[in-house]
Length: 562
Image 1 (cartoon, rainbow, N blue to C red):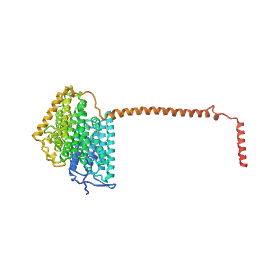
Image 2 (image 1 turned 180 degrees about the vertical axis):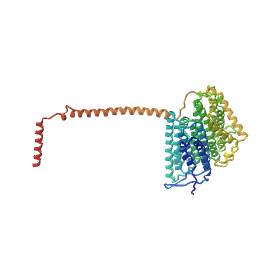
Image 3 (image 1 turned 90 degrees about the vertical axis):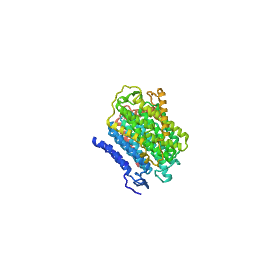
Image 4 (image 1 turned 45 degrees about the vertical axis):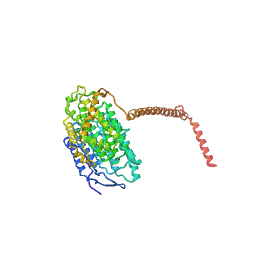
């Protein structure tokens, strides 16, 4: 069926290139208007219908609407609009704004892709846009992080494309549908998606790259890459059991490294890995309740994670400092930023009456309903760990603990407005979850506010809070940086490259010496024959030359006669 529905992604992607061409006031309107127009188009595309484009014997579907895609696209457009408002306050560079909107539009393109080729094109465009967002920070550290980020995501893209080609060759289909890891092609597709999800062993790229972007750039980065990976897993690999264990690994990986970290934005970056781990685990469980939980958690996570990073970005912008050891006591002059950070911290910890409570509990309930006792217990333990590193550690060390002596003012109004809107959503979704439940992929039959659930969650969080303050001396960080798999490309490969450079330099010097010696020998030989005293440079008497000419003419005459 052919439908003239306009791909919502194109509006955002093409509109992004108008940003640097407009005057300031018109640019501000565009930054807020593009996401609103895109959001309108997202809900105008008919369900299970869209544009069809014939290409090399295949039908491409760049605007196919599904319940899952519409849900993710909605929060992506919302994130782009509020992120744009936040970027206005942080005085983001035009390059960053263009890259961020191309990045957001590409993420929306992934959610509306009805075929794997379209998905791949937007997937790679996302990688380019996100790399430009990191690079736009304009620092040496950002440039190096952007280069490492791009290499890793290009590698993931190559694996993904290889999987798509293998799957197409084996089945003749490129439809975005439930695949399962049953063949070489689908396994490669799964691996390519997990790279973007931050799954092991390449989880470290999130904490390596995201904190090096600008305050607004980090907010944009937190929303799209990992969540489009969650969307792809949700649509193509529901019920793939290996994802349960991959997700659990990510959950505890993020907790451990966040507790070790000193940089406030790296704490929150590791927390992204942790939260995505919950979603991946739920997708591995694969029931309707679990898939609803993964989708709802992704929706809420984009909002409260952006709120946390907005709070951290406001602190960074006004103080120029990002290490917990350099901060503290900021609530005295930045009370609004502190309150917004605390609301985000409560939401990520699944505190009752916040968005995290009504979304994350769907996942743990799904594990319990399926009788997965070990998984359920590990997810509960991980919930306590989330409260430790993101719910308490971040706001405590940044806004409270010791008095650092810093007295920065509140960040600009636009940044506070963006934080205020997301704080409102965190509480509104927690108090009134039914509108969110209504747009989930499957019908929801779940009541989050039962006495048992509220009491057990409060007990869990209070115990985690008590443990934090009992072990407070162990929680204080030093001026260190934690490495895991990124040791290979930040240390080992760097040392290997230096050794290779030295070895090749020495080999080049030996080759140059050998070639120079040959050239000197050739020059000496030529000089010996053609120099002032060489045999070919001597002067000959005229009589001798006449004699030789006569002999040559005689020889020629004899040859002619005989």
